Image (tube, rainbow, N blue to C red; front, side, top):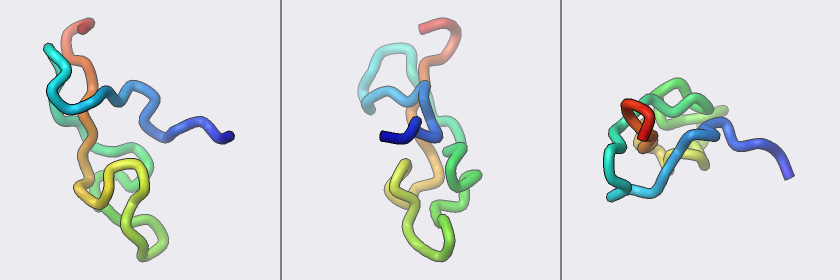
Length: 52
């Protein structure tokens, strides 16, 4: 199994987390013309902020 492009991603609703650009698609929501599987096409992932 390959390493996810966004290893710091956390579930939505996690305390002290905020939106960050998806590393896999660079925030575009697309990879090779297809919806990005890491961010489901939003271009954003939730990651811990401030050492959360």
